[in-house]
Image: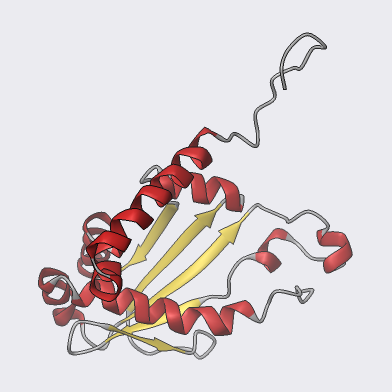
Length: 188
């Protein structure tokens, strides 16, 4: 397996992703209550992708699409109903769940996220824990506007929201995969 030049991002980003996930879960008491009965169990998160970045042969000769996917992640459920990151390479005795997230091209993932869609996820493992994980994926949302309002105040947050909505609309209108034919008389 070829080492991709961006492999350093995973060890830096995954602990912060765990902190963000705990922030979102702790803001909803019902989510913590659903996780508490599963304390000590683990959730393994795997990523699959068919995307190979442009210039991949130059950046990492011999790499495949799976080499560019994020590294696996293992989260243990704490007695408080939150998550604790563990080493995904070490075998675990705790029974749990495996979530496989199917990623597409980054611009497609961003566009689908802005439309409120999530990537396709396969769930394998314990049925009760799978039901709790499915509920979390369906019902939890990060209230970014509320968090920003606590730090910046309401007026700057509203201005940022307006700017963000404009950017969101521009991204949603952008279609990188459109294959419309351009004739000399048609506008670009």
